Length: 317
Image (cartoon, rainbow, N blue to C red; front, side, top):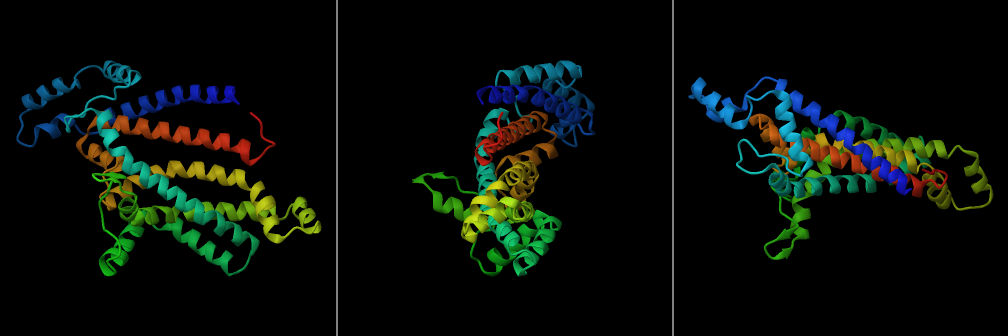
């Protein structure tokens, strides 16, 4: 087990190196000049050239990459072109809203989708199964920003139950602020979780329904076990591995959803930071955020792999 964890952690290094190279090259080869954006419309070519020199953009690409990546190896993600702050401090300021949004979304999605998919498989062909099929199609088809704006119109503008936008930190001026923190994130959580409920519930329904056709289910029923025990301790337990897998895959999709959701609800997280950096051609910020997202994704998938050991005792690393 320890050897497996060390191997997976070491495998993160080449993955991050490839990500760093690809992101670095894409940003440099796409049209747009951050020096021109900083200089403004009234700047002369000499002004733009001077800013490019100050930013180090006149150096060869290989040298630019080595200067940036050697800093990354020392924990320095660079310095923002526009915000006059280090990328590390910007990410530290913005990571709490993003983690709050992502973690809350996945918790809601799992808590709703797994029971929903299990019940739909148990009553296959019933009204719940048909309702889940329609909901899954709608959840995959409707963009998250459309869901967000619809919820804002209903619950914020018409009913005035929930706030429209913004974010309140867990630790406020007066200490722990969980109530206001959760209240502010209800609409973003529900908006983003709708897609993942559709995805996870659909996979849960397919996995549990397949498990219910196996011989060990008929044996359990023949032994006189209650249907709830058969469903939870046999069917769902044996379908847990594909469910855990799709949850790990959903984290990759969640990254894109976080960017859109933070923009819709004006949440000052890494998603909105990325959007601002892309619009301003702020290379160091984009590179730093992408690396952080990559590390989080790799770690989540490592946790999913480790969870297989507990979900299925037949699996050994």
